[in-house]
Length: 131
Image 1: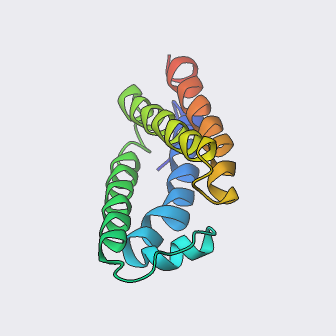
Image 2 (image 1 turned 60 degrees about the vertical axis):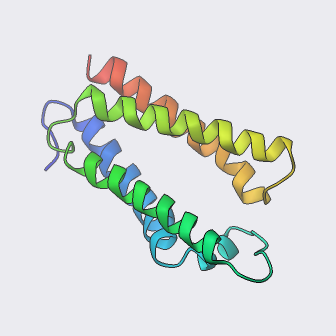
């Protein structure tokens, strides 16, 4: 249920959570190599067990964050927006590093802007709308 006191914060959690669930968490958890192909990654030759393992681990962590954020939809609080802000800041650093080293496909470089916008929006909501 959307919070009557903080509808912007609630809708942000619903929309961002759904987007991340569909685009990142579920595909990484269930089919990490297929997800990697969708985003333009060249898969390593030979044994991919470690790649699949790390992909599924990241998918599980993303799913845990999304499920936690979903609990805050009806009563948004600053802590969940702090978490989203920190996750986005970390992802901007990781993706920028990959871009500088030319170690990732273009889709991952584009995500720098996406994570930056989501992180800034989360922090704006945290400090202004949740006041």
